Structure formats: structure tokens, C-alpha cells
Figure 1 (cartoon, rainbow, N blue to C red):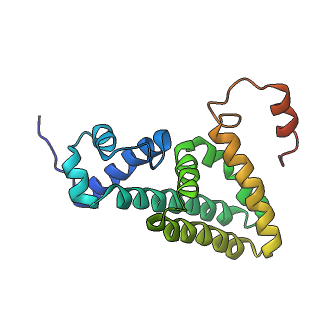
Figure 2 (figure 1 turned 30 degrees about the vertical axis):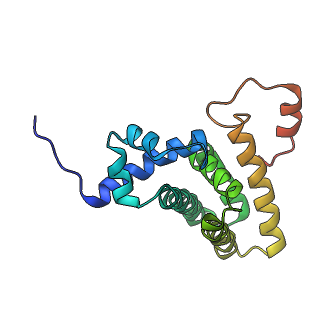
Length: 180
């Protein structure tokens, strides 16, 4: 069997994908570079050689998650450049649940001085992109993000999404308030 070496870019992407899985499960504080290395099938020193630190790996992971969300919204806007059109893309985002959970962990870790600026920049870029894609006002975009955060939290709790838990009465009532 011939083994093919991955390019540096492919290895970087492989490590970030492994980090998405690891950080979604354990958050920033609860995840080690060793866990990421095990998921990726490489050594922990290799992860550090590529990223320099756990903090830089987490920042790369948050940036990746934010960029993926933005790409999903761009794709949705190509067909329907409205807030409703972007809202429909949440089904795809819920299918990529770990991305949303990583972003939630990023928001939670934003009080860390080494993480805060990058996490706030990621959120700001998303806000700006939604306004640019849809022409929505700041208030309309705020409401879009408020609903989106609710959907994100419900997805993280597995109330929504492809692996949702059985619906309880409170869930049904809340889900009934969401736009279709």
C-alpha cells in the first residue's frame, strides 16, 4: 500500500477538523492538544509544532467555524438574499452542530484576553455579512441574530437538529414560536 503524504495545508485542515470535534465536546478549558492529536491520528508535539499553542489552535478552530457559517450564508443568499433565506440555512448549520457548539464555546471564552478580540471579530464579521447580503437594518439583523442564537442553543442542547431528543411539552411550545 502506498502512503500519500498530506500537504501542509491539508494537514492544517485535518487538525482543525479534529479540533472542531474536540473543542465542541470539551470547550476551550476542557480540551487538550493531546485530545486533538488523538482524533487527528498525529502526535501532540506535531499539533504544537503546527499551531504553537492550544490558544492558537482554538483561535484557528473558531475562525474556521465562523468562516463556514459565513459560507453557508453566502450560498443561501445566492438563491434568496433575505433574512428569511439565510434563516432557512440554519437547517444546514444544525446538521454541522459541532461548528455552532465551537462558536458557543468561543463566546463563553471571550473574556480571556488572548481570545476575546478574535471571537468578537468573528461575531462582528458575521453581523456585517448578514447586513451586506440582505440589506437588513441593524435592528432587523439584531433580531435575526437573536433568533439564530436561540436556534443555536436549542441545537447545542439537541432540541433541534438531526439528532434531536424526544420533544417535551415545553420544547414543542417553544419550537412552535420559531419561523418556519
